[in-house]
Length: 293
Length: 225
Ligand code: SF4
Ligand code: SF4
Ligand code: SF4
Ligand code: SF4
Ligand code: SF4
Image (cartoon, rainbow over all chains, first blue to last red; front, side):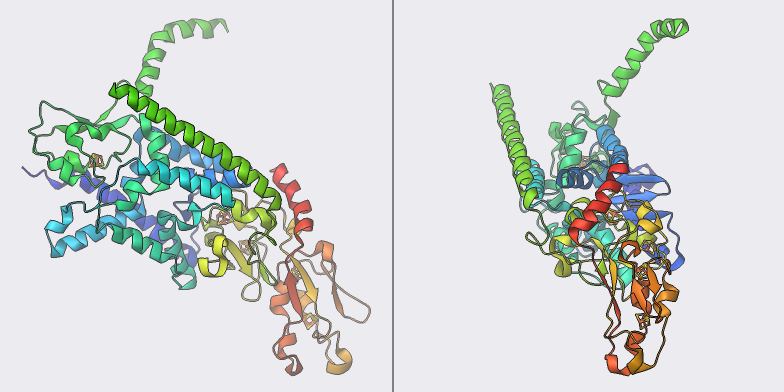
């Protein structure tokens, strides 16, 4: 009943994760040794030619503490915010270097023990903690007056350590934050991402009414609960939880489900469809207006 | 019944969050009056350790910079380095230039990639990373009676020689502070440390500009951009 490799969304996800990781891992070396700086930076802000992308949380922190709006950073935040609006936390599951490293370590540990790969969560906390992580983080930032997440954000640190290594041949102590975050995965899969990542929380919040969701078809479901054990975020797709804010659209459950009771859909009650629909119905009247004006 | 409970819960949560946000903003506002880097947290910027060109005043810099490293990655001379948590505390991840290792050659590439406006695009001549100070006790030309040497290295290497650095009637160099960019090329190239009596000391150092002075210059630039 196994799907062929190229049909499994998870493989595409792994490929994309690896691709994104490769960009931030190889780029500092390109910059340093060959002066190819078409791409600069990592996931706090990455510049690809003239396209600047700024991570929403870091940009927000910078604005909150400096109390000053700088157009390029606002513009840079548009792309990630739009992606999150449409597809939720896909950054976390499809691009984040921490997720890439988690997958790699999972697979690596899986070599030694088949069970470890989809092991049970040893600790599970209420998912709501995520919101407190976000608010605490922002409050702390404002009270102290220095952006906090920008210097300890694990996804950013991965890029920074690689850059430090490429440029100065050193690895700083902050690398331990990454190590700790990864080793927390031994207790609970994606422990940090699930409960404590402020960036993940912000993206989840933005993607609350996202268009791309995983739909659960109860009449196809045979109640085997495979999807529940597979979900890295500890959600239970088998009771329809995949449509909550906490799902990060990784599609592990879609691939795992033996009866295809789970699938990606673009919500039809969503903003886009409504807009399109309105436009279609009003286009005839709009045509009249434009001809007179 | 359950639904109702959930909405009140959520409302409660929103209230608390909103309250906390407003409180936090007010609190941080009152703090911002005190936010003088001298009293709050000591900045690691000091003699010869400077912010890259176009940097906003030090008291705002660490708040604006998101530590993305783009400025360092584009610098063709690799002069930009970053503090880590041991050397910089809350300043960790922010860029600096150690002019004694590599000075800034004012190519102005870094200011154009900064996404947060921590480095504000400006002309070469407007850069004020710091100001050069000549130690006349160490400079071989100022001590020509003793050394018998007439060195003009700093004058020759300065990108604004004759403007930022001048030579007086005794061929001794002096700095015109208003025009010096603080790029540090002169300090880097100074040969005074080769003179045996100087014990490896350079005759020029770059001092970061006083907070007030920098603020006057740069806040204008920010508003313009
Ligand atoms: S519900 Fe499915 S898509 Fe969502 S996080 Fe879990 S496994 Fe991934
Ligand atoms: S102006 Fe040029 S040389 Fe100076 S720090 Fe920026 S990129 Fe480097
Ligand atoms: S490019 Fe700007 S925001 Fe990024 S590290 Fe440099 S100064 Fe900070
Ligand atoms: S005097 Fe020195 S620091 Fe000042 S602009 Fe000239 S070379 Fe740069
Ligand atoms: S390079 Fe140094 S020693 Fe030579 S004139 Fe300048 S300050 Fe004096």
